[in-house]
Figure (spheres, rainbow, N blue to C red):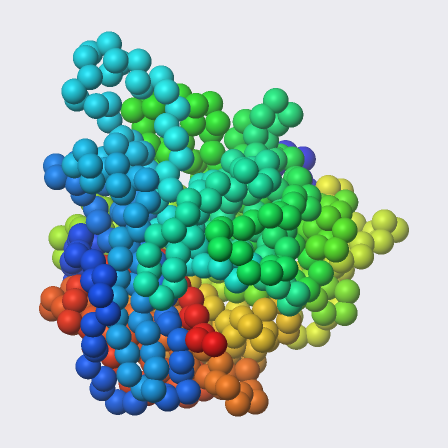
Length: 550
């Protein structure tokens, strides 16, 4: 805890540990460069792909890890490769294209890495003389537009996004790269997440940062719905709803996403810190961006609650013990309380650990040691009382909701929250979970019962999980040697229940080349309906979405 915070006597339930791994198989083929497949090719259907599915499953992630002898250090750094599984009348075609970002094009032209990425510092041009090479180290490198994290939508248009100020508009049918979009031309921010949320009115919300003479701020952004169709990229009308000053302007927090309920946006200021002084000097020191991040578990994690309607930041300081979260599951309001469910870990060093070197470690002891050093990410629920009476005594639990063990205790410095674990111990057999997804179009920001995720019995996801929050029951799809991608839920057109629909995931394996497939599960029973086998190599990716055809 920080010196200002007074922690209640009750202990906080930490994450449990998964069993130690022994004899893990190698996954180097899953982080190996592949060729693109720009023209759609047929797949081989096994089983049955429901005929009501009509659209494209779009995915993003790294697909090229070197240019000649110049190699990327971190998994996040690989050049963005976009994938499209087009589904119609029970048939599936597959195509993929490298994003034609400035970073990709410049690297290709020079046949070496000339644009710095998250974990890789571009070295000075060897063709320059010694003085030019020396002074080039004092130039702050431009942000990359290698948008390899996710597909996102603004005003009905598709973009690929990363965690810088740049996005690229994409044609979702051909995967053609369109305009480069700079967030800073619309709002005063230096970077934005690749995980926006969407309101029921069609508005999009995101989180960005800004820094300058006034300090470092986290900014909540709103992009209004489209008023008419435009040919080019359009973020006009984007506005900053709220600016939150960093607790320490010299060492702001890293964030990957945020939570949103019907009426509130929640920014989670966690103790993964960015040292801005090192950031400014990192080129001189020859360090990549991830080297300026540090995990500081002596600090609190703070939940900043912002009213979506007014942009007003709550005056109540909600906080908990040090933890980190990359992905939230859902958030909603219930009788004056804000419920937040998210995947959490107790060691924020994990982000810097996903280097290509680590992921390509030899099978067995080396890979076991790396995997066993990683923290276990598990689902948690935090409950925040939206109205805090100043007359309430300290050390009193302010939560009166039934069916939760989460607490929120008033202290001298705010409201200290302890979480409820959203799992039974059998989840530990599957290594915890990440990449959570829900029936977003119908249940985001609303009470819900089910979520889907990847189980992590290996360094990459090696199972698909369905969690029923009524009883915290678990259903699993897992087969040895097969690795899963983020599961995406697609609701059935005549759905009556929350889990009426299918779950899609791209399955890859290091055991045999050109043996990837698109898996389609019945979301209710969590059994396989069908698969579309693809005769190409597909590397491990990050995020995706389903684009329903009109």
